[in-house]
Image (cartoon, rainbow, N blue to C red; front, side, top):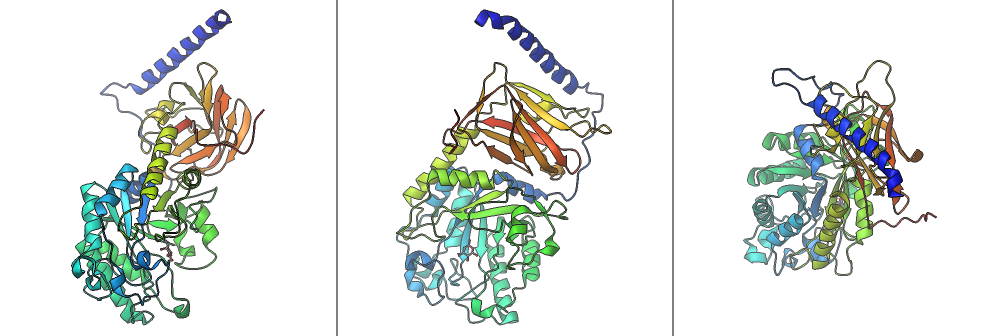
Length: 494
Ligand code: FUL
């Protein structure tokens, strides 16, 4: 048997050599010969800070405050500050947990709906000042920032607009002044905040209360211009429309901000899918807790690894960033079982994605723009600015990439496709064929699209990714075939 295969093998190796030579020839240009220019972008485009945010993939949320000690999700605002007394608060442990999970940004609830401040605000005494913790001399936000900085992790802050303690709440000007004062206090005191988190939650009895979002946002940018502002409607990061960690199957980073208002009902669907005709770059963030609640409760336990992986595929794998909440407990530490689960998640992601089976294979493309835009660009480490571009010659509409195995053995169950979003999000529809059989009818791609196949494992010779509809020429920055050993499909193959 092996002898029969020899000539075929030789001819294949020859083709492979020629192909590699072609790549080398086309990409090596003389130092004096200018190379071809990149294609024009398709607007809207992300900002520098939005691109940095997108590449983080997973952000850690920390809900911590009086609720941690009263076993509630929403405090009443009437809590006695004496309840806030973590016996062994150690923000270094939080940062270590994040670092072990490969997380580069942590967001802390500086104030939740109960109004209790984790920093010694000069505008209220409903804060750590009035608590027994460190005899009222402590500052959780400062310790959080210091620990993160030591671990080279960036920080973010959540300052709840809804404040159930503050008597000025509901009195428009007075309350907005109070809120803005606290915002300035935080952003003047703690530098290099990378994300600030606003939700639209309001007291059901004060639905007419106004939040002066425009004033707040302008002030935020004035004080820290590279910050990303999160809210239902951005301006930099939008809510995905649910709290389950699930983005729409179609998910555009573009949307029309004028169609959105913070806290409005009935916008969830629009937030979840975005809008191909959107004039604003406003990518979605998927917030979900590792446990059932946002705050730590003794009776709750972390989600299973398989649930967290589902969440990863449905958020990061659908062009979003996952904001995963890991709440510190009454001691002031991330619980061992949460830390362990988070580490398991990181190690599972590494196991699945560190090996790309599309690497040592033969890649064919429908066409290639002249210059440095060959298929090899889809296999390097740069997932933003190095990409394959089709030629765009007149009438050329069918754009595809084929991944051929050398020896009849591609063994995978996950397909990864990434777009060069620095030049705009373009792909509207794509299809994936495995050995000629249509396996996936996909829609958007964006920064990262992961397709986990409905079978445990596929053995194939060729995988074809066909772009069937795009806003302009598709620009693909990375492709991958991976094997996920944690996935057990409900479908059995004979
Ligand atoms: C919501 C809040 O009501 C929840 O308590 C939690 O903080 C979640 C992340 O945002 O608006």
